[in-house]
Amino acid sequence: MAKTRLNSSAETGRILSDLKKKIYRPVYLLMGEEPYFIDMVSDYMASHILTEEERSFNQLILYGKDISAVQLIETARRFPMMSAQQVIIVREAQQMKDIDLLEVYAKAPMPSTILAICYKGKTVDKRKGFYKTVSKAGEVLETAQLYDNEVAAWVTAHLKEKQGTIDATAGAILVEYLGNDLSKIAHELDKLLTLLPENNKHITREHIERNIGISRDYNVFELNKAISQRNAQKVFRIVQHFAKNPNDNPIVVTLGALFTHFLKVLKFHLLKRNYQGANPPPGEAAALLGVNPYFVRDYEEAARNYPSAKTAEVISLLREYDMRSKGRNNGAADHGELLRELAAKILY
Image (cartoon, rainbow, N blue to C red):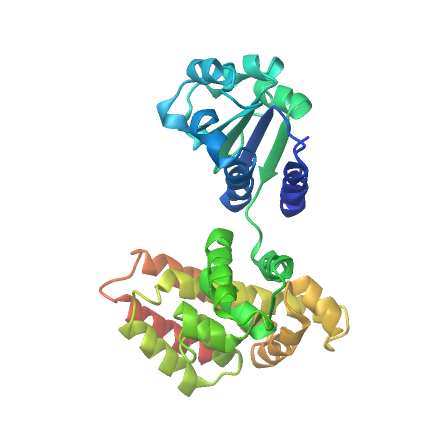
């Protein structure tokens, strides 16, 4: 059965565990918004089910735009050559116009064929027979992009599987910089792990800054912190750097990070109301905000410097400047000028 988004990572792990035990299903439907989990399963299948010698004759990587359902069914019903199984992986299956016709094959799949349908960016129509049949006779993995507040926990879990760890600050900078693109984050983490000694796979802020190209002093993490502290000198120094290096610091990323930050500040204010204006317990605040408890004190400081009314005003300003950065009611201001103007309105 297809699982909800909250189980995407766990379900991926379960399917991979079965594959490692050589427990195979005849048809796999790997679908949804998060391509990372889909690629994890299909890449493992491509690399591990058959031996290198068997792959030459019995493994096919096909693409949805190049094959019809009828052609795929004919291919899947062939017998393997000098092997007990054949593996067929259909990438970009969302481009198949007649994918629902695969219901015919899913009802009576070839026992010696392992067919993986990689349907990225969306899900198939769950009301139709193809989905229902695969759900019963095969394996369905439904994925969704993680929410921003779930990515830090995913980073920790990903590193734990590889016997690695990461500083809370380093993890926060990485997530601020790369967002919720799990493929990109995993690539950078794996690259860092290869650079570390075998006996110390602990990633620090210095490793992030030195190897991923994130400036130590000029990044959105430091900008959020400086604005929270109302440190005008530091804010304008960072903004000026962003204005001079727009390709490395696109305004859409900066505004997105600021918007997420102030939404959390607003949530912190709402939580304080439950405690008659006092700061809530760090653990409860961390759970609500989706941050490491280490960073709760940053939101306590931001809430002191930005009362709830001012916080709401800042969120409104960020929406306005997001539209202006896209050309609406902007006049002749470039992105650097917009950032400087926005920073002044936030601080004063």
